[in-house]
Length: 304
Image 1: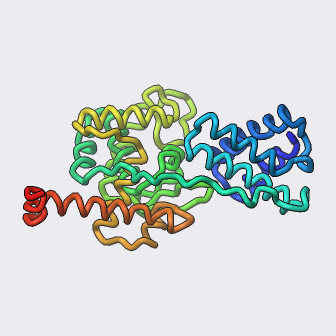
Image 2: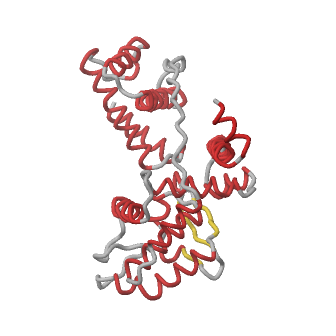
Image 3: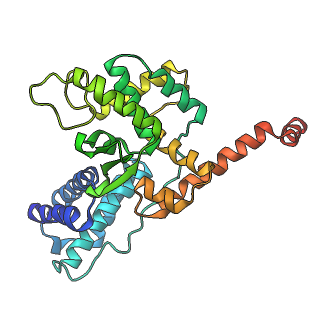
């Protein structure tokens, strides 16, 4: 099975183009799955796996009271493995095809108002090397709707201020060109010219655009701490993550009339159904604004 999993890993990378994090999650789930087969059924050959073995493994997951989202991911990993075994003709059939993933409740992501985003951006305007870096970070991630991994993977050579775009590496290593706002261009130019050279402490400068106060590459955890601190200073009561700014970017664009296909391109979504969640957010926000501002809505609440 170890050889099979190595082959499967290559298949996910080269054929499916999945992200590194997704592949790691799948392999971790499948290690658990194959260990279960070996421990309870002495199965270490794919040809010996039966439907009842998969059913028993899933029952153990439910007994452990894992979340539907976790169970769904594990089922997806198992189904992907068995589909691979079938298409590669290692097995004559896909015994996992009848298994269904549980329905996952769709919780709408947190979205900030424009005013709340502006508060965070204004708080970040400290006149220091780290202040200029933070301003550039926030203007770019909100102004272009980047994923945090895309933001922190940007290299100096990916930034094209005169042409008003950056090149980012999306999910599965897929490259795309993303436009950047005037505010982001101003913040980036200030950071790259006046602040970044002062933060560099190593003889050979890092290729990455955003660096930390020790001269190394800025990490996800480092950016999250910066954002949390600025949000707290701005008096934002909800939990703010890098994804919150991406969600806010998408929602604000929809509220101002962007079409769904254009938004899909900007966000780097392969499937437009992923982008459609933001239409639900906009409808929810529209309802909230209506209830809070329309005089007849207010009257109806009073009379309830």
